[in-house]
Image (tube, rainbow over all chains, first blue to last red):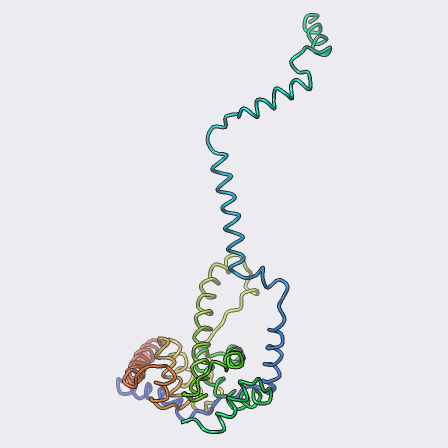
Length: 112
Length: 193
């Protein structure tokens, strides 16, 4: 039994003795030249498909996201400039003074 | 020692001679293809490797030092490129496991190299040779390269040492370990078919 297995292994190991060299299909040189010519022309999307470019874009996007997240997290205190802007806006649209509409609504409330 | 004709061919290649390049391709294409085929075990991949090898030869012939034989240099490029392809195939396979989760079966062709038949094997030895090729595919990269160069290309241990840039005893050790491992792999396969 063991001898049979050993013989079989030896037969398999010897199966590549006197093997002929594999040959390429015809017109290999033409295909090679075509590939070489194609390789000379830069593809328009080639640059953007490069892994280095993709990693760079992703890193920039990630950095922007982290920056925005860090700046937006925590309590948001209105800054002096924002307050100033708000009061200017109120002044401009006369929100601090009573308007005819407010008076009407007041009278309407009283009537009810 | 490099032949005078080979030196002339190298000189013409360095000057960008198109005819010299064609001569080089015709002279070495089967050597490259047969070596690559033994390592990658797929006809279309082996042709792809062969094209890459000649493109590299064309681009870097300027840096070729005439102390070594041209064939040694070409063998070295071929084995390196073939191993690169195997590495790429391995990582593609790993990525394929993830990809298969959202792709249909038609979109992801399954490669099968286990039943590869070398075209130079005679009909009566085809079955055994296929088993041997499947076992060779399981060897480590250095053992695989040394064994393929010896078995399929018939290179001497000294030539293999030059191609692989290792010592002669290292080649002997590689081939010896390759044979031991092949016996183990084949024994396991025969015991559990």
